[in-house]
Image (cartoon, rainbow, N blue to C red; front, side, top):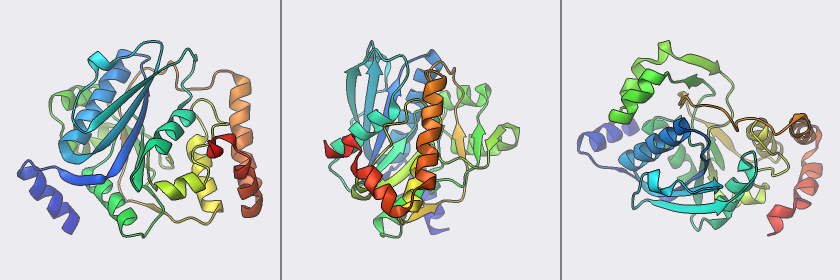
Length: 272
């Protein structure tokens, strides 16, 4: 209740919540207008509610910098790429290794989480009560197009929460969308698994690995909201890529902690 009250006072006084010791890492690839809309909603939301750091990495054939929200908190980087699909495990790791602070947040460009949940997650890291925090309880709701249009005009989490019953509950077992982490612990745990290319099992593999290695993972009560968008690159390149993703996940599941540490030590990206 103390955190709820603090956030209410800050919002009423139009003050931002202090998170300068935390860096939000957002990889992005423009594949539709709806993706760009979502990114700008997310950036506007984070910079409105939080005094923080945002590292935004865009990849693709062309840069969208002229159409992306600009703010002192946002550090924008562009990398040229002709890859057909978005290799976001690679780009998450690039962002992670470039951070100089203690705490990071892997943050998808299509999700919104309550300021209360974000602050509670940050405090668990700050107080050394967790190494990693999922800032939600696994419930993931798809926000409708009408609410998204309203969000573009008014960044109100109350607007989202009041209409939750009208959204589609995608799953009660979401392991992705956003993850708070102690940067050093994340790097030591192998970071994101770059053997997984495309969207699918990288989130659950990451969580399974954290658990297997005996690291402290906490979850925050409350949902995560997903903004609607087209899905041209939210999948695997082909059937072989999908199979490879399954193999990586099951390899982590079937390994003992010692075996898993040996596997991680063989990953080339952790020795860069």
